[in-house]
Length: 538
Ligand code: FBP
Image (cartoon, rainbow, N blue to C red; front, side):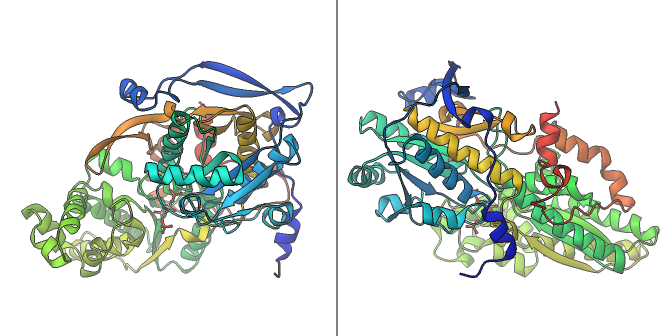
């Protein structure tokens, strides 16, 4: 396989580890934990894994030889930069404990465990993937591990391969399921541990103990580079308004981070739209007013950032989508579903351009949700802003030219070569997972904290997954799930945007971050995200 010069140079990069993981490791147990909410219900559902203590690893004087152990690893859900480094950290961690340990990768996501599709990951294979983007080493998938028959199939293959621990690399849902699996395996006393790792570019798997999910750093830097390039083009040609939709299924962390990195004229945050109960018309009016204000200064160009999930946070759209989700599940075709909409939703639906109507009724994802990445919100907003500006022009409230261009950045960033931050963070998460395994832990998520400090000062340890759980309604029934972290309007990152956005709207204050740098001065190569820096500055 032909490799690029960067790939070759990058393969030699040795990711950094926290001091505690560099030699002998001692385990320190903290206090017993509680779930973030609904303690009684969660305790009842997880009698074996509830209340376990927080764990921190510390550097120890000597390194004990551990028995050889076989471990299985699964990549779950959407790709995120750094997945290969979690696996290489896991591999190196296992081998450092005992060179006869083995790592098996289950192929194509959680279905690999159920269908017994796997491969042994040897050092030759691992070396090919160090510091590279993508999940192609073993592939990923969105099959949910929720049924006991699936768990039992897992036991069968683990017994066959003598696997004593599974590491599930995934988002909030996959880690919730990892904990259900850990609980089940404890109940069955089958001796298989389960450890989770926090992955998702969306950045919504975070809390007091998990500072960030891996991949968020790299993906945001890739999008910010391209947004900066578009800004420079806009500022050079001075004739287009660019409407850029950014991935992030539900939460607006990606849009907010890219907004902070590049200082666009408008950065919509879905959580604010919901909080203020802003209608689609109000969003369109805000954008049109900014376009008009900039046009009055002779600036017929600009950049708008739109979070992927926006549509589901606009109150009237949320109701419409919910009705469509239910009706599409019970009706044989789209026409029938649309005919059964409530009068209000039918009016909202009728007001939308035909293309968007079609996108709203496309096939649902395996969880029954509309696939927001397929809805062209950027085009919807361009069309509606244009109509609004025409009427403002007729009323003499707008003098200028409006030419909108739509973009969607998502898949471009999910498999990028991990930034130095993600390369180190992921490697540390994987290496740390082996310590949790060697300590006999199960139902824990690998945790690496203090991440705005240099890597050797990072704090490694484990967090019981039950600690992050609450009860939420899923498919009509209450279920224990890891609480999803949406953008907090009282958090430092959003406040920073809110303080500056009026100026950024009218003046042209663009910042051009340029491409991710892997080699060079630390202030260029090793900066964490603005989100993390602002959150940790508290
Ligand atoms: P995960 O939460 O599984 O990491 O995936 C996140 C994501 O990239 C979202 O941002 C996006 O909406 C979705 O996956 C797209 O899904 P798919 O890869 O199935 O097209």
